[in-house]
Every structure is written in structure tokens, then in C-alpha cells.
Image 1: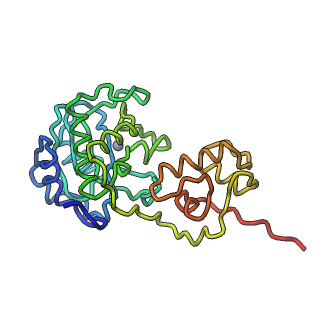
Image 2: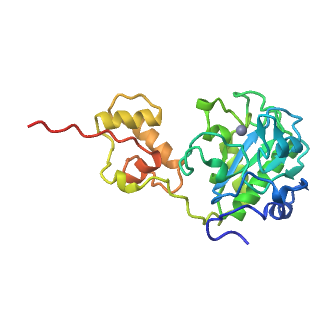
Amino acid sequence: MPQTKIWTGDPVWLADVLRAEGVNLVEYPGWRNRGHGDFKDIRGVMVHHTGSDNATAASIAEGRPDLPGPLSQLHIARNGTVTVVAVGVAWHAGVGMYPWLPTNMANWHMIGIECANSGTSPTAPHRMNWPDQQYDALVMSCAAINRRLSQTSARTIGHKEYAGRAQGKWDPGAIDMNILRADIQARIGAGRGTAPTPRPPVPVGLYADVLLFRGSEGPQVVQLQRQLGITDDGIFGPETEAAVRAFQRRTAGLKVDGIVGPATAAALRLELVPEPQQVS
Ligand SMILES: [Zn+2]
């Protein structure tokens, strides 16, 4: 049964939904009792590569001297074998941000998948060094989890999209996340995705007065441009509008209109620039 409300707590159903999807599943001993505490609401899936083509499921379950396992809930070997190693929280996400995740808290909201893969290089083309069996198992696993949670594939993200360049993360390497999401969505099928998008953990009320659009100027536009990572000339022109639309398009729940109102400002966690005091 797909989830009709936001799932809260550990994904005790992991092995069942993966097996039902048709993956070659291995249950690592003790997975039902492994984890760094309990999940909060599960918002999606985060995909990683291990950094080595030969990393084992045991290494993900048990961890390293400097970082105790589990390091994710699932491991996918190069032959497509999926091993569920933990049901509770795992240390896979580290610090980072994404519009519908609380900053630096993704471990408590995202199921992690570690794929045994070197990642090739940060600029490698899609699927270089990803055997068919491993890639297909990844698509099936993400689809099974997203579907179980009544989510679209928009809720599968890569570690590089969360932590990104600031943290030096580029995994999963040689995976174009948009292509992966399209492949996952094709597997999920149409008519799914009824789970409400979590609201950004920022009160929209704070942004009640924000309204920036083509033609706006000034320090608040400079701040907006900085947060969008574009030229901060303080003039809301075509480039700014395009960047706003791109942000709205990749943020579920926002209207794609190129206008920064309270909802878009909240999703962006726009840093508000105080109005200059009137001097009389
Ligand atoms: Zn990672």
C-alpha cells in the first residue's frame, strides 16, 4: 500500500518493497536493529558512490574507525545485488542543504544508498563505469522507495545536490541526476506522487512583505542574486528572472512565475536586507 500520509519513523518495510520491485535483495544480519537512532519523517532518497568499485556491504554496515556504521541503509554492488544493512538513521549525508530538507539534518529524513563505484570523475559522462545491473538496481530501488512513500522521483537527489561543491562532494559521479530521475519516474509510472511536499522549516510570515520581480532594484536584489549564485548587480533583469524560474522549477510546491514572493523567498531562505531608515 502506498503511503497516504508523510511516513514517520524507521522504514521497516525496506526489504519487502525492494523484493516486491524485483531486485536481487540480501538482508545483512541485524539490519532491523542497526541505526544511529530513529528516523523523523522520511522525505526521500539520497544517492552516493562509495569511492571504490569494491566497497562491500559489510563496510557500509560496520563503518570505519573514524565513522561508525551504518553509513547508509542500502548498498548496491556492481552486479546489482542490493543489501539492506540498516533500518535506522545512518551517517551518509553530512552537512548541506536542499529546499525541502532542514539544513544539515538530512540523515534523519533521507534513506541513503551507497553504490560500490569509484564515480569515475566529476566530469565523466552519464553512466560511465556503471554496469547495467548496478544502474538498473539503483533505478528500481529508488522507484520502490519513492512509490512506497507516494513520492515522485523529484524526491531522489544526489549527495552532490545536497552538499555540493562547497563540501567537495561530487557523488554519485558519472550520474546525471536529471536522467536518473527520469528513469526512476518512468519506472514509478504516472498517477503517483500524492505526498505533500514538506514546507521549508522557515515561517513564510517572515517573508510576508517580500515581492521582487523584473525591474526591481536595490540591496535586496543583490542578496537574492548572491543566493542564486548569479551576478549580483542589484538589477532584477532577464538573468535573475531565469534563475528564479529555475529555482522554482526544481522546488516542488512553488509556482514557476519568476516572481519572488513570500513562498519562494521562504524556500530560498532569502536573507532579508533591512529597509534603510528614513531620516527626517
Ligand atoms: Zn556521498
